[in-house]
Length: 595
Image (cartoon, rainbow, N blue to C red):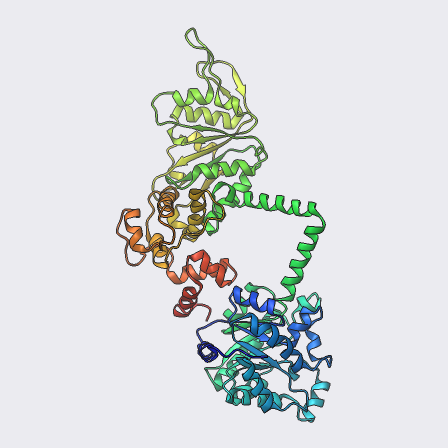
């Protein structure tokens, strides 16, 4: 069976340079099937390890089977490594080699690996995974860790990359002194795979051990890459915490990348096909979550500022208390007021919308509270009466006359109101959700409301941040308005260069969300395939853009925040920032992120 030969030298040398770059964060997938190799490549893995443990997991076993005498390990890995993994990915593939067999000719074996197209070698399974009794037996027979070191030394001499599995400082020092390019610090199996409630090593102890080994390694050779191999790491945020504390330069995932996600996916899909009503319940739940998150109403709340406003909306929506939504012009008050209604217990009834007009006299008050009949006019029904069993959304409350504001304060305090020119009090059960506009940089304390009305709304205000204070929401808002403009939920995202995104982030947005929507509508009507650059944005924004943003997040802070939101998934982060994956990867290196 032929191995990979075309472009092999370029691929290997490129990855060798990447492994030698201490500014890069590497992600390796320790797997055992071609399907998993394809998925890992698409998800952003940098290299693949073909290990017998990965194959045992794919067969329904566990990684512990890798050290048991169940198969000829090297022949086993060769069978699926050549027939599946090498054919399924363009990533560099490391061969997990076992040196326990005394009949193994290391020179012939390594020559074959290179001829078949493997980019590197790693010592897996290793004697470090055995108990002291069995390891001692192999060491006495000359089949212990020294032979694994010999394997990697000879592999390096043939131009193959090397990753050494280690567990102690002494083992790491021996490997580095022998010339390996990278070490994988592997302490124990993933507790999610073994089914144990907790790992035999916790995250604090893991971080301490990793830090000690990394210091030992770099005291010998600063160019050696230190990778963390599996262990108790089960979530991206756990990995981020350990890397931040220890300076680890990469991660090799096994069951956390293949078995655990696969079992979860199969379980969910099988249950869904088996019981249709379960799927329906999940759909209903997702619908409810979308509503709670505001997406149904065009409210994007990924930033901390908007997330706080959304939490306030959920807290204030349920009872009979009034709600006052305050923001600058164009910041989305009406959408947010509709969201507050949809979160309450009156959401099944359509809200009544009443916009106050900037007109003199009592016209707004007459419509809101009604007008008693006289000799010239019939009685005029009030808006409060029509909204008695739902929510009354009053827009532009600051345009209501002072007399009308005091009448509204009476209603909020007593639930009673009197029509203009009337003498009889009437009751309404309408929940009042009002919006009010403040000038640039001002807050609820600066509202042009009467003191009585301000007191009636006290404690029930929701302050929406201006767009300039929630730049993290820009990518999601742009996508949302693109979908609205094109009327297609599957619309292709706009091709916006990073320079254009930075220009959008540096804009002061005096018109807030309304202005952004108008800008996106213009961008969405450009011919398909046109890349939007900062220069193309200048006439759309109506101003000449500065070369660097004077306010808002820096480029480094923006990328870090996006990585956190997407749990270090570089593909999703690149999409959220409007970058290609390659561009994002280069910026991570240039800006020294994830060191």
